[in-house]
Image 1 (cartoon, rainbow, N blue to C red):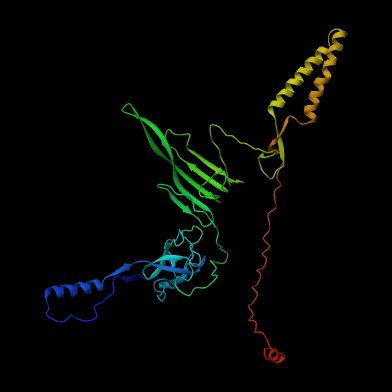
Image 2 (cartoon, rainbow, N blue to C red; image 1 turned 120 degrees about the horizontal axis):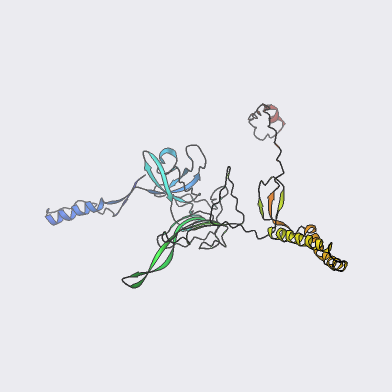
Length: 375
């Protein structure tokens, strides 16, 4: 696995002759020492020609050829990923760094040959170049733009436009030191998790799906500490309970029938508009007061009060007829609906489907005589 590279060419082809003077002996010894020097490499580049994905014991292992010495034996018969729980699976044609431990070859990572976050395949670097080499069964090259990096950030990028970015945002602060205002920069910690980049910089309003975790510059900076989640659809499911606790909880639905509460299997019914219902109750009391006033007093006052009743009655009828007191934008599950209990499925103890026996199919038969000989 480890390999050596001579730093010079041995030009000493014959032994020196003549009087063994000290300068001549010293020069000859130096030439021998220089000719024996070499560079020692503990790791070696390895070109991948096959990837094993979910084989038991060899998950993520690769086969291929060493680039410096294509005839070198692969210890263990296969090159395994060094770490069992963090695997950077290469595609065919990519070069990985291989090291040896206890008679087994392992690869540590993919060599950055082309500076691409999508693929760095250079098939045929170890010889035996095959034209139109496929990266894998389904993998195809894609133009994925690498994200911009800044001072001190740590960035993990996938091949398909997803990333986890540990970065920061510069916040300028002004402090008073010895009665003088001094400006200094603070780093506000950020974690950006994105699936589906649309440019070289994260943009929560343009990327497909994003989760931003933003910290503050200090304990007093409460306004900066927040979590932002944005996507087309967001699904949160708790098997037992989802609890929201805050000084204020705001739920906004921009289109009709978008806020629904309760068991989704039950029919949804509209909620009541408190402002309309309160006005409706006030109108009823006013109408009843006017009606009682119309029924008492002189005949002239009764006739005058009766003329004012129909418009008020029509307003009350309109609220009931048009269901103005109901809010169809906020729906809740019908509390009177009872979900039916589903019967338990009995164990039928059905027999297992037998496996179809493997039959060896004979080669193509040329004529009737061959058919008779193979019966």
